[in-house]
Length: 269
Image (cartoon, rainbow, N blue to C red; front, side, top):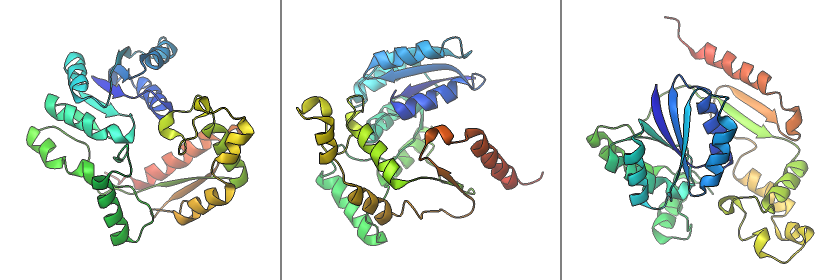
């Protein structure tokens, strides 16, 4: 059993933290840290009594390496799980290197300013080389690999050969687009996930006007098709999930399919 420091407490992070809390045999202590500590406290309150893991919270600015270092040294976790925003990956990796702590990544790095010349040059060169219109680039994190190896810690970015399972979330695109519009104009939506500059609390417009200013259905559909979201499959097994109505998504059935596939990949001893 070990202590883990989880940085981030947004929607994805909250789900991951609850999953970790269910495995107190692995994560005996969980420290949840975020710029907005009230979110961490609220999740801690929700988890208390539902897990045997010890839950603590902390405030940290993930853009500030020195704050991150101070927190890691105070908490002394076995590993840091990065569930913050993509543009904060490198500062968290720098802090882990400084403290000699294992680092677990969950997303590729993307500059906060995607027009930043250095980031843009790498991005566009890769697109031209691979013939992509958009791609996920891990080269910034890969550049840390040797430094982590020399430090004797695990960046968990090592390459492993393993069978892949593709889980495709699809549905009625008209319905999904409508849900996207509702979510995009919600004041509760984190600005890191809001399309362009559609910040509801900063606009004196009606919800309908905000919707009209958002991504059109035609552009939304074109984005899906141009990026190949509707046809992508890494190869091997694929599970297609209709998310038109979340209430009808059978999680138990999906889990059964995943476990069946996983069992088929385990070689007999």
